Length: 323
Image (cartoon, rainbow, N blue to C red; front, top):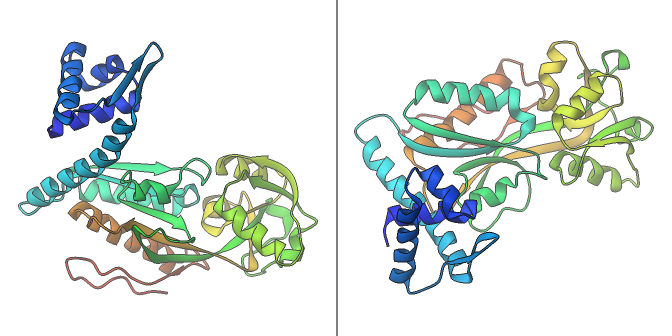
């Protein structure tokens, strides 16, 4: 068993086909089949169940897949750490970010990181809670770092306080909403709401707060993406309840208005795996996320948000001050 065989095996497992995996890996199908048979013989176990419908993993194959992902990530991390001692960070880095932070945090960080560390292959996953479970991505080794809404931390993960901001009501420009005029939960009851489909962390925060007061949202429209919610609000189809950062770009353009919901705050956490340390690239990303967030908050572009806690960088530089 070797690293190459494990990479080949994971590709076959992901695609469910030796033929498609061979095309992706740019090797001949017979050669890939021989590698899979050699791996099974070496482990004395049947890893792949072959049928007319394609390839599925046996119980032994599922066991190997879970271990192989972690082994390869550890191998890549060691290789990157050795290389990085003689130059800039390199290797792969995967992060998962909520779509609500797309304009305020995700793109500025991506742009700065790519400029600063061009030798790192950066992978960014973005999706609502119903599409992307960032907690499990990090726990399963599919991502090195993630920003998530506060929740019950998993035992295998380290979770650090990152940003705290209010949930807000978003409405058309002429609806009288303003950042300096908070609304109560009671103010939401009679407003037609455009809501992101469950499960969604922002919706959970608002509905939980309203349930504590025996209140219910007046849901007029339910959609599955933040982009559709914002478009519906901009078009005057209703109001939305989203994290403040979700609508900043439209607010700056005057396309919507926005008001914080009194007492309803979302806390964002930065999470990483507990067992495996971050690569040099991961450490730089960890620091850069905080630096960009600090800049956006301190310049007033991310109003009403607060930077929470700090993560000491490896190079000993002090963290940005909290606001």
